[in-house]
Length: 164
Image (tube, rainbow, N blue to C red):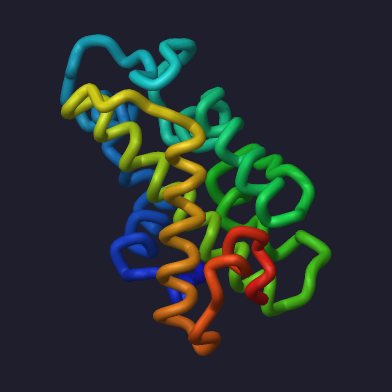
């Protein structure tokens, strides 16, 4: 997996664990002989909780991906696997600098979806799609403006995704 330089290591490690099927979803834990009872997705209750479902097929994830692609002014994300999702920046017909940003945003979305899922499972904090999208925008702006070579980005540029 290709790491993004401006995203914190914890997010890159999460994406790497996601790609190597090391995220402790219900299905992954069952494969390791850890039985928690119901394997249904705690977010949508429509399928077994797997990484593929949680980050691609779950209606919450689909709505977050649609909101993020609209914010980024790119076509909707369509991925059939986690690898497709993490490599989606490579096939989008945009300039290379924007591809680097999209790559980081994909990693941040995965991080935010996982955090929202964990907050629901561990403390019953309701999952709100608009809150996840706003968290992606805020973290993306903050990390890109402070950790990349492009320093000093205005907030109004972040809101319209014009910082590339």
